[in-house]
Image 1: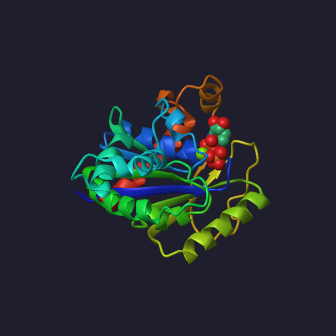
Image 2: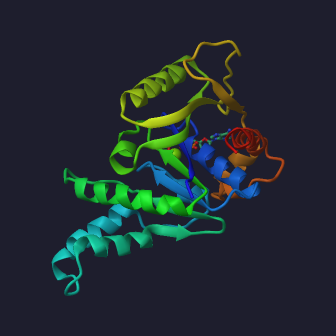
Length: 251
Ligand SMILES: Nc1ncnc2c1ncn2[C@@H]1O[C@H](COP(=O)(O)OP(=O)(O)OP(=O)(O)O)[C@@H](O)[C@H]1O
Ligand SMILES: [Mg+2]
């Protein structure tokens, strides 16, 4: 099957991981499974938001294989071994799998791993109905590590002029990369209390506004995952409404 691929980008602290988790929660609730959740932000906490404890990252696995590459079992090629080990990076949860990219450390070249990863990703993506990717602000790694195709990209922004300018810069930068993105939307996160009038100018359409949600705040304080939000949580309802809208357009 060909998955619907959704990416989330935006400046630090705007709510990328929260939105990625809300999308995953919405898809789970409307039974759009299986889902592959990818944490492609080295600083991210998507695993924690989804209630998955300490998963191993791909980078950690690649590093482990690099360390023992000269003592592999006889006849075992490094690429084959890495492919087997990579499977370990996929955490199987209830209705979704989680893959953590991890932080690339030092000046070493990861071209080998990235190429392998790109091929492997193309293969495994076919097992999922949806792929949801939480990204770092820039999306350079996407073109390095994946095919770079996305059906939908959400850029998240807070509702002040500086944040919106940054969101526009991110949009322009993403545009300049060789990515094939079918639709790009802005999500306005109003959790800081700032709002912006409806008729402001922005190069891409607003998908929806995410109001401050006390339930998200409480869950974060208690270090409990977003998947524990109640059915009436305003952030969940807003996200689900838009996901349903997307589904009605794509199906
Ligand atoms: N709509 C909301 N209502 C209440 N709290 C929110 C809302 N959106 C985000 N938050 C809170 O704001 C904080 C930052 O959100 P989040 O971690 O999703 O941002 P991020 O863009 O992923 O950050 P980073 O760049 O560090 O990865 C979190 O504590 C989150 O719980
Ligand atoms: Mg994050």
